[in-house]
Length: 184
Image (cartoon, rainbow, N blue to C red; front, side, top):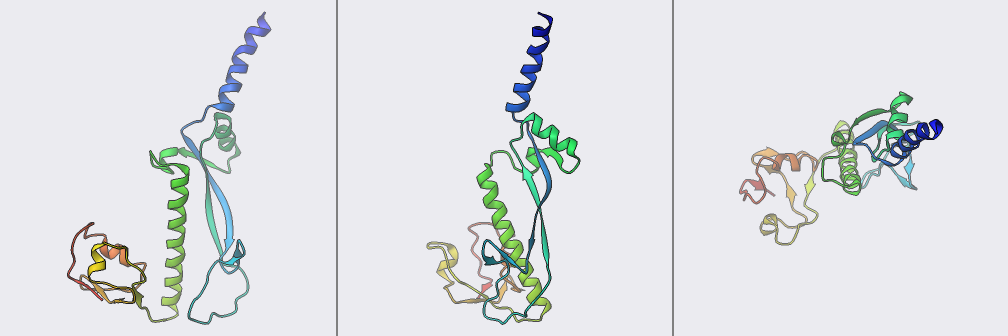
């Protein structure tokens, strides 16, 4: 009888520890990607309209792996490993966001980061910059005075140095604000 009474909490703890998720995420080293190589059969960095130099060696991009929806035992295992950190889930995924939404946000941020790196490299190499309008959303305020092929030169008097800078230059205006100082 004593053995049975002692086993009940152990079995209950085992069930809870393996099946109940905790509001924490594990963060640790993720995969390393060679920016000079290929990923999924595609060059990580692609140049259009210019000839690139032949390169050798590696230019490694480091990533952070985030593991969410951890069981109690998973969280304890990551914590005891010393390789991963345990942080509240709200620090890596805002409340109300699904894993799929976060994957999409991370994908967009990674693409923006790649574009920023390309811009930095081209600036370093003194390549000239031209920001061209590729496409416009039908019915958007910009569609009334911009068209595909237009070249943006200034926004509110500030020079447009790269497409990466345009969202930051427009951020102060707010959605729906009409701008007469956007010049193409």
